[in-house]
Structures are given as C-alpha cells and as structure tokens.
Image (cartoon, rainbow, N blue to C red; front, side, top):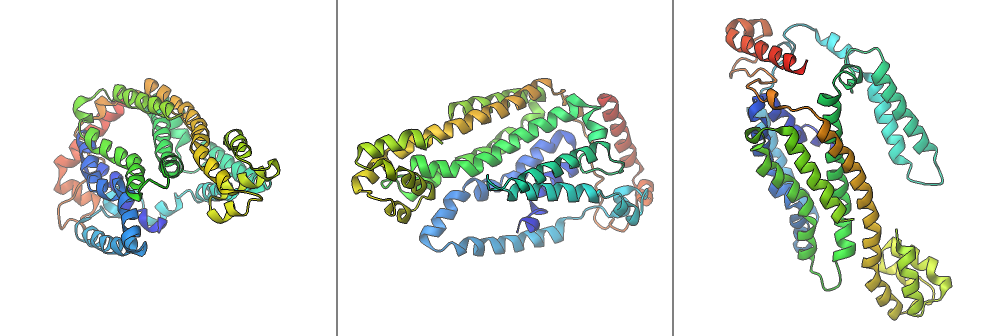
Length: 383
C-alpha cells in the first residue's frame, strides 16, 4: 500500500511543476484543500466508522475513491514523454545507466537494518544500519556518478544558504509533523482519555495535528507569494513551532511506585506493576501479584501525571531540533527573486503527446525562448 500510494502522494510536486513559480503556493493550497476532509478529520471519521459500523468500512470507502482518482489521472494527466522531457539529449538506455543503483541499495539497506534493530540488547542491526547509511553519505558526496540521489557535491558545498538551509528547514518541519502525528494520538489516549471521556472527544482531540497542518497550508499557502519576504515568513512560523513545542514540554518509576505502595501494594510487586502499565491491557494488570482495586484506582489516577512528565522530555528534545531549523531560517537566502513566471516543466497542448522536443521548439518558439530567458535569470540571481 505504501508503494502504491507513492504516486498519488506526490500531488504537491506535480502541481509545483506545472504552475509558474509565483503561483506554486496557491496551486499547492488548492491541491491540499480536499485533504482537509480525509487527513484533517481522518481520526474522527475513522473512529466513528469503527464504533458505528466496522473497521473494514474504512477500506471499503477508500477503494471507490482510489478508482475515481485513477480514472481522473488516466483522463486528465498528460505528462511529457521521454523526448519532450529531455529535449532529445539522452536515450532511454543512457538515462537508465545514470540511475544511482548503488546509492539506492545503500540507503534502503541502511534504513531497513537500522529500523529493524528494535532491541537494545542486540545492537548488530542498529550499528550495521548506521554504518551503511554513513557509507551512503560518503558515496553521494565523493562517488563518481552523474545522477546522485542526494546532490551533495553539486549543491551542499556550493550553495549553503540557498540549498542546505532550505533542506534543514524542510527536514525539521517534516520530522516534527511525522513525529507529532505518531505521538499525539497516544498522548491523547494516555493523558486526556478516561472512563468518563467519550470516544468522540478523544477522536476530536486526535485530529488537531493533521487538521492544523493542512489548514495552515490552505490558509497561509496562498498569501506567501503575495506577502513575499519568504525568509521572514520562515523565521516567523518556525518561531511559532519552537514556542508551542516548548509549551507542551519515562518518569513512571518516579511517580507510580510511591502511590501504589501507599495504596497497599507490596514493594516486591512494583516491577510487575510497571511491566503491566507498559503492556497497557487489563489482563496484564490483573496478573500483578497482590494487586487490589484500591491500588488500581490510585495508579489510574496518577498515570496521567507520570505520562505528562515523560512527554515533557520528548518536547524538550523537539525544541532543540526545532531550534536548529530556526537558525537555518535566519541564515537562508531570500527567495523573492525566484517568484517569477517560470514554469519548471513545459506544458503541451492536448494532442501534442507525439511531438518531440525539437518539433515543439519549432512549433512553439516563443514558449521555449521565454523558458530559457527565465532560466538564465534564475541562474544569474543564484550566482
């Protein structure tokens, strides 16, 4: 499913390639607008389907939506063919040979090994994965291949403010979004859910991260090119992220044992109690030796405070990561000169799929000339 979703999740890149630079933010905002329903309210809609019907209905609804998307893609999506894309400069075999197969193997193998190493006692996979990823970085930086996955030798050392800082900002923002998307639902379940909390309240609380992200894309994405001063906008929004992460800033061993012992649990049963809390099931709690209903009530009342203290340290570390992004925002160059009418990819009229690059230049010379002029302007600004 992840591989199949790859093409459809690249809608932002597709929109960016067919819109002029000055309208890219507006295009991405409109493309993300339908996602507010599915992604923004996904937690609530999914839980409602599970409680009212069956979890399988989530996929039953998804299937016709994907069929509709496939039909729309087949009917309306007309990407340039190989000759139009490369203007006849390379053959298909030459382009195939340019693929960085070794880099692909190194990054995939390194990440798989690193992620599979979940045990703290067996460090072989984690260490091996880390070493392979390190080799990948050196290969991308010093390897002799024409089309690297990460153009380190082309951009990293030649354009620190224009390329590296932007990559740091995107990495920090993306990491924060993915991490919060995973952690926030569990935090809602542990801190804000109780026997008196309805599933609707829990579901609405779980939607806040995704709903906020996509709402901000739609609301703030469109005015970016109008307001300009992109560097100052990046500083402003990154400062907001750092501030709120700090405001949200495992201490189970410090909070739970005293409460449990005071409620009557023997000290010898404390390790079993902590293991049961980590397991998180009523059956595991019942297996704790000499546990009583009074002890369970006391532990349940104290657990939110323990989890709150534990989550605080997670947000402290997130503040440090976001601080790196904030420094990059101060150092990044201003991209206002690039907000021109340049379109990254040539747009062809309906029925032009068979036109080669040379024929296209003859048929639409004014388009190619304008494209070349704006490319030279962008290169001059970058230099």
